[in-house]
Image 1 (cartoon, rainbow, N blue to C red):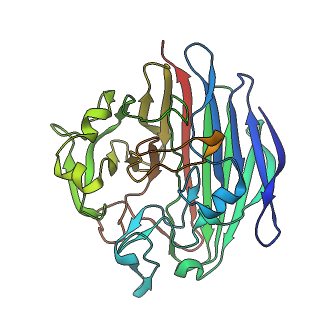
Image 2 (spheres, rainbow, N blue to C red):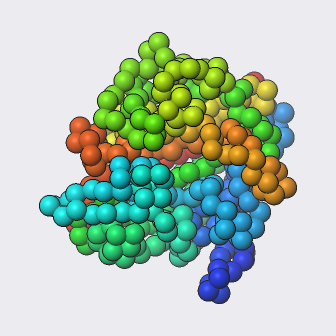
Length: 353
């Protein structure tokens, strides 16, 4: 596996942004920029050996700067939603930005998806690895603590995109990092994802209200459109009149993974039958958000001139549960001063013939 680096553009203040291309011996390619730690493209073969880019995104830096859809980005300091943008830690009340209706979403107005990370190509476990580093200063987006964050991207010869997250803070704080890639295994410009089949290794999911915010209730998937305990086509559930589908405008829910011990385990499988492309998701996190691209609305002039309509891509975001700071029975995103936050997620690509 090799990594090459070239210029991708400049920020408004003149700082250079670079794009890194990760290539393995099978010809799989992943491109990442150090603005937002964004995965720009993921090119993988189908059952006939034809390569296509299966990650939604843009061709140019200006689009990432000005047309934010979280495509491919690392989101934080706290991914997903916090009710009313408020949490209490050590008796102190913190008011965060409300950037998603009444709620705080993906780290606020300038989350980790909108900052320039320091990029370095390092050797780890015998292969070249892209290390992206960022210091989120105490009070940034009103979160406490100087948080030193590192995200490592590598590509194995088994076609695994490996993402490792590390963070440490000098004060107690909250951390919940995730990658917000939108996938379409037919190709990023192929349209609707309803023919995809999904399996999630979870028997339960977290109920949401009309603001897509977990209520604290944990529901059983059995007998509902949320039962993906076997590979199941996505399309029929999208048209369901189930109250939870109506609340989310489709799927925009967190599944409670069966593996809750913090060890790397399979969380999901995604399959597109006509192409044969197959993606497995592994994580050390307790939850995964399946988002069916409900808010894509005909975004024009995207990568390769594509238009991304509703449900042109889907996300499988590994995470702590949303709104966990309110619901104490959810796994906690609190990171104590001096402790290390460590989280690994793997997206593994193959074909089924």
